[in-house]
Image (cartoon, rainbow, N blue to C red; front, top):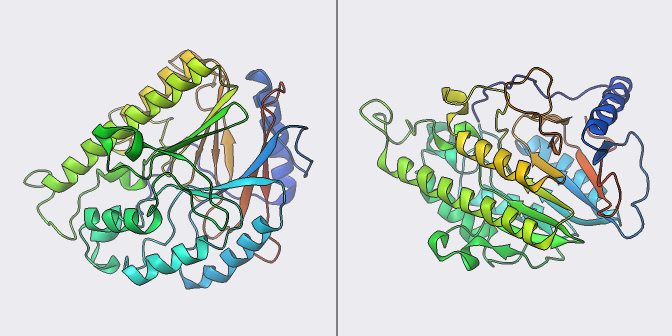
Length: 357
């Protein structure tokens, strides 16, 4: 994808520095009422709780395929994991978007033992207009993704798939959106939103239409963005509406894109995310209980509270914690332990895969 660097770049850090980072994050989490912590060492899940894994932005090229195999073996060896969340970019922006490659990535993902919930990234469809990627019309690649990776709407991937709620099955106005799913575990509501990098598909499709954004927005791209935007906002409203009505202990929202929350609304690098950012902040503030925002996009473990900064123009919002997954060339994962009845609901632990760079 084309990277627009965030105000606080995520980066992989050496072990000693990571311990200091995690210690600081634990202190920051205390500002939010102790709902989220960062653990520097493995610890068992709280009684009655559960754990899940966060991965994304891998593999980037054939060189990383064996590293992802090692990652999958590490995930499969962890008996605590109830499911795995993959936040998109299953190929690099330099690889072709051919059918065979997408099928091979699906075959690899299906080796995960636990249920695997996947939300697409930009590299596997939005950016496929580039000549280097095959010069595909992105909406045609998106249609293929939906047929391959969401062949059974309402059911996850993985060797032991689980039932999920699909927007396509529950919302006739957005019946195409098989990829937006929701599920509940121990009073914690999870949802995926199809929000991607490349400015959420506001970057022109110049590979298939050189006039895009010169003589006007490509009609297919404009329709795609508006339709997906409406679906995402509707699904976000449904998620928080149900969380409020059911007295959920917490909410988890997963997507591919780094929303550039720190950037000013309306500027080109943030424009494609503005509506989702505003709706997420509004609904999270009204919910008042822990909200965990999970994403990939910038290829390094990072954790913060984006709306809990001193000196910000908006009122502080300490109940929202953001976690970014590892990504190429760092083929590792993040373990999140969940204790719905505890003061600290989420415990976030970065995990290295032995032998991977």
